[in-house]
Length: 183
Length: 174
Image: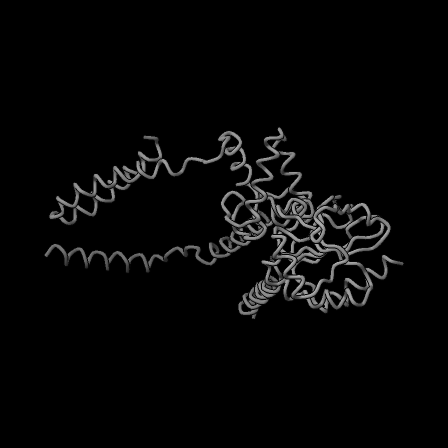
């Protein structure tokens, strides 16, 4: 059993225990569910194995295509998409890997045909500056605004010292209330 | 006064950005191939499988490469316009039948008319990858020296044809 499955089991079992603690009458179901939970990850474990002839290539292909955008279904990676387009590109990547091309050669090949848009992490260029540095610019502007706002606010909230008369009045009030408590 | 004006200004700016964003088409991705030599290919012809079409043979003339398939719905939309364009005899249109079956493609052309000077087959979509095809139909304008000058992603419309493609073809034919 690998680590992921083990953790999965622990979490599932934990959730079950928590729900069962609330309801003390589910002993039977508890035992049953425990076995189901142990059995189910084990039975699913085999399905996830890659079916390619060359697992090494397949692994590299998936790592590479996870960094690439599917142009047909734009919120999916080429690794995750089931579109025909993604299938074709995966085949292309597989073939190029078999031909001993490096990862960079393959991404360059795709960028030359589909543009920087296929990359989830586009290179820093003049037209991608906003993308890369925009958030930091906004953070900076926000930070400066916050700084001045807090400064202004602090000024308006500055404590005004009490006059002697007010102090006496406050002391009297405190005395009265503590006297009242003792009675 | 500023108290009320600032949020209003901020809102207007945000609204303007969102409005522009709504009108952008996320499918239109500028092709890096424009201004670059069109990838060279040799492919089987659709009607005469024994003959191979070489894209190099088209050097010296301006031509359109239309990528289509019988399974593609918007190809059906643009098809009458292509037939019309072919009749006008302004520019040769070469049809790249993309990831399709020969009999289906021929049947399609028999039914809807064949606007293509020549039809070629790319059953596995390999030439499609070379051309950066990701959404059929796509149409490329290729000049005399074999350079891609324009790429239309999605169906060719009357508007695009009259305002962009035809003037460009005329200019390139010079």
